[in-house]
Structure formats: C-alpha cells, structure tokens
Length: 268
Image (cartoon, rainbow, N blue to C red):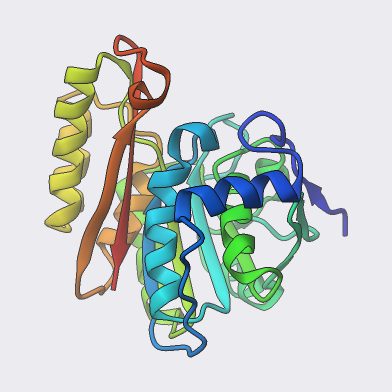
C-alpha cells in the first residue's frame, strides 16, 4: 500500500528529526519520565497548529500521558479542513512517514471499524489533512516506533455521528489505548473575545457536557474546528478530565487582533 508521506514539514513543524527533537527537548526541559507498564486507557485533547504556536501546550499534556501509562495503540480523530472526507473517514492505506520515522497502521482495528454502519475506509480523505499528521512527531518523540495508529477524520460532525463513534470506541478500546481529539479553539478574533469563547469551551469540557459544547458553538458562533472529536471523548466513560493548558497565538506572535486559541486536556 502507498505510504502517506508528510505534507506539512517545514510549514507546521521542522523538516528534520533533530530540529523536532531540539524543539521538544526545549519545551519539556529535557525532563520526561516514561512509564513502562500498561496501566490504563486515556484520552487527550491537543491542538494541531504550527509547533511554534502550540507545541508547549500539546507537550504539557503528552508528558502527562506517558508518565502514567505505556501506550500501544493511538486512535487519532481530527476534523476535515479540506472538505474531502466521508462523514466518518477511517484511514486504511499504508504507513505514515514523518521526519521522525515510520508509523504503522492497526489494520485489524481499521477493518473492525469499517465493518460498522457509517464508518468508511476513505484514505483519500486523509491525503491533505494536517490535524492528524502533526500529532505523529509528538507521539514518536515519546514512543519512537513502538505503537500503531488508527486515523479517523470526522467529515460530518453531527451529534449522531459523534454518538456512533463514542459508543464504538467505548466498547472496543482497552488499557494501552490513547484516544486523541485534535482541535484548535476559536479562530481569528481578538484576544479578549478569544479568551471569552475559549473559556466557555473549556468549562463545557470540564463538565464533560457535549450538549453544552454544541449549544455554545452554535449560540456564540465559536469557530472551534474539532468539536466533534472532543465530543467523542466527552461521551466516553472516562472518570475524570483535567484541563492541562490554554494558550493563544498572540502570546507568540504579538498579534492580539487575529488570534487562535489552543487547549490541552487529559481524560482518565
């Protein structure tokens, strides 16, 4: 099968393994305690912007995961920025290649998913999407090539599709699985409005209230891209959620008039 090679090196993140590692070493202060035993299933909300803007926010959450459990399989859900994907688009093509190396696909789980109504094998829908690709170097930094992935693009973030995905994942994931919702928060308004809208999202996440999340996104016109993936986690049977970090692009580039918000959160 044809490999899915990185499209966004040199744009969203550095084009060399050494540069990525240097950047991550800087943001983690070279202090990463890796757990070597499989203890639990976990969920994660992380941003998918350029690393200069959001790597610190993402790494704060990734560090927490890998200090608590060893991970063998990662199910990564992202939105469809290019309007190319089917409603629930499961990748079944070849391995993904990044500057950090090769990431294999869990084809058994892919086959299982597409055997369920509403799930489609749709590798073409993943060709240009960045929200999953940018998560892989983070995972490779902590695990090298000792894991497999199941990439899912949610092309239609209807509440019905979200419930369908959450029910399937709840019943068919286990200890050693990490389920990632890749999303940024509000886009391209000023810093004050971005903070106000982002904190409404964060409060809905803290309460694990997907109905409230959908309500405020519509009511307050919040341009959060991956709300469907986040809602999948909110509807799974995790016992606890901890918001790890929040930041904005303005904190990096100084542009307070056109801002993107980022958050990371951990589900146990």
